[in-house]
Length: 231
Image (cartoon, rainbow, N blue to C red; front, side):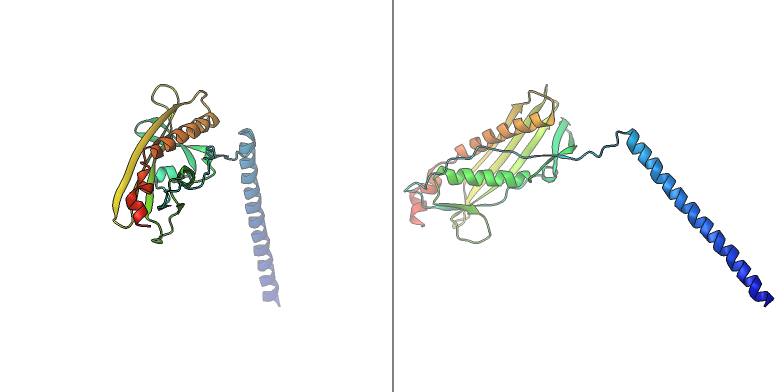
């Protein structure tokens, strides 16, 4: 009986000690959380959420295809350097440095935007009987591939500027020959040193770049005698 009472006493002492240790850990955790809360409050106390932006080019005209338009073209999704495919807007403080805005991001992958814009403008040109997204099927005569080379803020050329560079080429799927290729680079000046103004100028510069890229495409790529004979 004595041994049983001694064991009960030992268990009670250890139980009380465990409860005290548990309470001490709980109080320590609460203290750390309160300290973190004080630090956040001293820094302003507000959670900062990202701002999202998109480019917005005017819609091209949508006329019916020309009577002599017989060829079809499929548009591959444009490629880009890996750093441009991140959501953050890019700025370059020097030719060798690439940096990203932490709280200013693209709502849409810039490559997807360029692909859609080029597709709409080729469809609106009326030069092709059909313009569609490339899906791997050999049901189009031509395929257009492209690359977004640059879409960034430039801070080292005297004032704030933006640069947009795009390249593209069109291949005849029957002959595997390149029938057209072009590359353009456009710069634009930013009037105000804030990100919304940078995005606005990127929008204008992107519109000029796409127009310049596609304006060099000869109409007979799609409507020439060879294209007509193969359809």
